[in-house]
Image 1: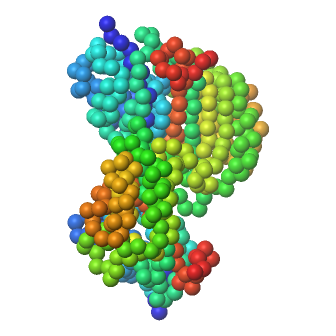
Image 2: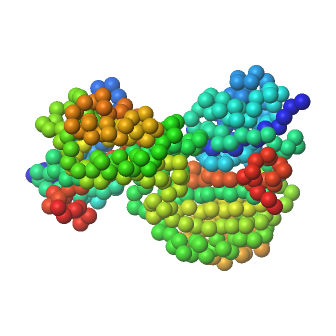
Image 3: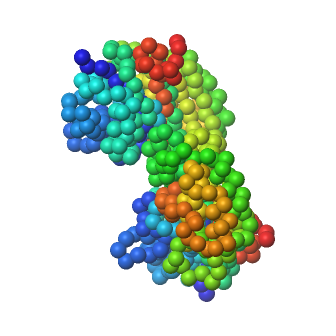
Length: 261
Length: 261
């Protein structure tokens, strides 16, 4: 009988065409599947808590796969980390419930978006932060992030193309803070029960427009009421985005660190 | 009459064969010289406070060049940042004393070496930190770093090939600390009046050997006394090393932020 395994993945999205398999470009899904197939000599299909776009990073993406091979979780983790490219790491690996589904079982997801809002951006941030040339009032951004918390219809803040039943989501947390080592580096962090396609990047695009005075804070409330995409800002570039964490109920994955809901 | 300009440079050393021009590989010096020559149509020679090896990074390398062209410092900085690859940035630019020499005028230099000493290294650290697989006693490392402070003959802690008059150097500061965001990431920082070739990397190799119990702390004192390279540890890999800052006397470069000695 196959066991369902869960992987917690960190990756640098710079060199990949995103999570999902593509016909003409290298995806994280493809690299993982091929590495596991080469190691264990059985065909596997790896699913994730959600797709990440090209250039988007992960610190705690969660993926699942079914395995015939009896390899223990910790040995699978070590073997994968010896064989994967250095841009992908298995941070954790464990057996999951037989019906565990990383996407549908996810209770909370956290994304972080990073912007460099100073004079000259040090090269080391160039793959993980986006240079914001406009002068941003971060106090204003922080105030607007509080308006986002709660249950809202985020229809105005998503890209079409996704086939969601509802565009209502709950944001549990939304905050902005300066990096402890580099004050010009600002992080914006969002925790919610789920996110629509491009939702974080459009929220960030909107917040930055408000922070520089180009857009009115009232547009957020109006956008919630009307679902009008034109009341939201542009989609911020992918490389500033990181999927930080995905949380599940305890019985879904056999690991102490999962959360009680 | 030519003016002498000073550049404060940050670079990601990953893609370069180090600071110094090579015949068969791309160096930071070559990229800078060619970019300036293309911009200002005059031949330039750029010298630095010291060479950095392939893979070594900089946050505050200081370089100098003589220019016929009357371009103001801040315009040169902006033009360079528009034309250099994203892996090199001019963090600051100003006129220097006509006889300013970034290498010989340097009063203090600071290097940082970063090690990841945890279970699985997140991919984002792979170009700037070195994975240390052994269990390190960081308290012991910190104690040994205190032994390094002061004026010593660092002959045992350098690679031959450099033609220094003396191997005596003063270390003003040497400390180790955990990264504020990632406890498994440890930084080792050294400030001195100058550093011999590979000195920081050999000091780090020695400290890590001591920290895991492979080498005795007394070896440091013995190495100072005897100059015996065998009493020091291996040369730690380049990618963990960053040249953080080079400090000069105030009159050398016309900038408020320079230091009084």
